[in-house]
Image 1: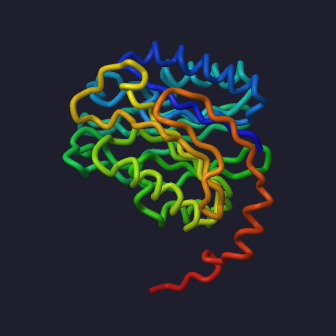
Image 2 (image 1 turned 180 degrees about the horizontal axis):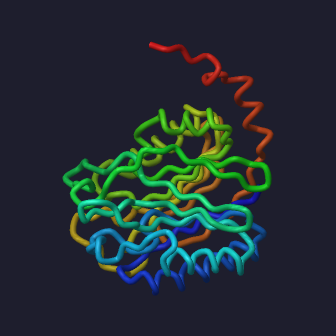
Length: 264
């Protein structure tokens, strides 16, 4: 299974970000990828008023993403914002493409390091997976990476790959935490973890918005044994990775943490 991780810096205008997604999807398709994963907030960067931009899953932005996936003949995973009650939005991942239509609302909201995502975002509650060519993928978003039970739920649902779009907050020690957490979650659930962050705005020549989590880069594909297989630095880039899916079963035989779990 060949996948692509598109590490980009998105801006506040959804229509301009669509052009970037279209360009990157074509590059991923040309490289032979079956799935291309974009970051959290691919629709519009954090630091932007989200409620006025939110659209339903049958709205024009999601419809345009479906058209991008159709034209590129691959599955696109991209972060967007959908309307929620009380004037809030849901931080949503759309997964769409040939034979695939799924959406996931971020369960664990980023109320940490002085940022309060829950002020404007409503949490989701459902574990979501989807299937491409017989391979099951789980969906998670950014701060979810600090909660291992979600990734084990992906594995329990049959997933051998978890995708983790993110817009990681910058700050002292945050890169080290990101790198530690994505490796730990892959090993916790003994699956591949495809973690794609927004590129560092500074590396893209884009002014960062105050304390909003706008990305640090360092996207990576981590194997089911917790080792980093492919990675990017802080700037924009397209990572192409081939996943040996048989390795998941092999690692689960040698490190049977899922089978050995006990209720406490």
